[in-house]
Image 1 (cartoon, rainbow, N blue to C red):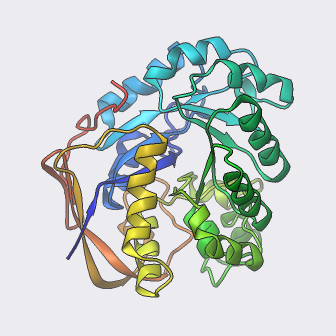
Image 2: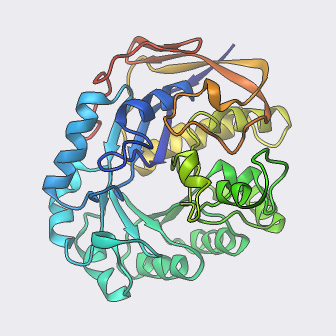
Image 3: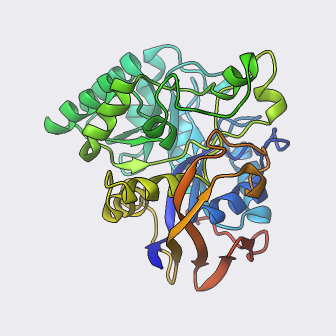
Length: 357
């Protein structure tokens, strides 16, 4: 058996408030524990989005009642909430800035709207960018101008990872994460048993989109530039994914670790690579505590097929259905208590702690 520290996923869409038919704090934290993740950082683009004290309280109240693993909640940057967000920084996982397409109170479609957040949000508090390609380059420029750290979410393209590498070499304070689906799925992806026509296309909708093989190869070739692995767990129901206007996003909390451990078995990663990007670096970048007596036991030799029917996420499907992997989570201990044991969730709703309290 392999013993790992409790893993941290810094990019999770809980879907509560507003879309609990997809997921909620109860189901998402069960999925996290089943995947060896003992702490999640929740994204703010819920309905309503988390952008002020009232909406932050709404999310944190639900988490306090339901979460089975530890957590923190991001605030969303809006066009007119820079002062409010800065005042709430100690209570939040950090500030999430949506610099590409989004909706409502979190829409930042003019660079002049970015400036107050860069000026006012505390420099010792995490600031995460949902930005792609040229907007990512603009965000890195802002980081250099205001001399503050930023973290780039879900890097997927060769041009992006090479730009981040160049920025790091010049001392710009930028870190980044990559999601497993961008490491393991080229576009068109390897065989995925999702049916024909629009049904298959809809289940492959994700943002950023699945990239070309050259982009996947560039991520692997520049592994040293990647600070974190993060699922961007974004659950939608099968009815939604198979509909006329499929929403983008994949569930991923329960598949990330086995995919990465399979890459370890294949010689593409080391165990130290996994620990660094799922524990050590997330703790440093997001200023997270180290829970005492917290660890994950993995059967390195277990070979099996990924099946949605055996998962805890409410959405009920996975893009990795049928993939053969090696490495299975057997036990998770959180703060001295066994919270997952051989396929069973043992922590009750509300056992998870808000790490920003």
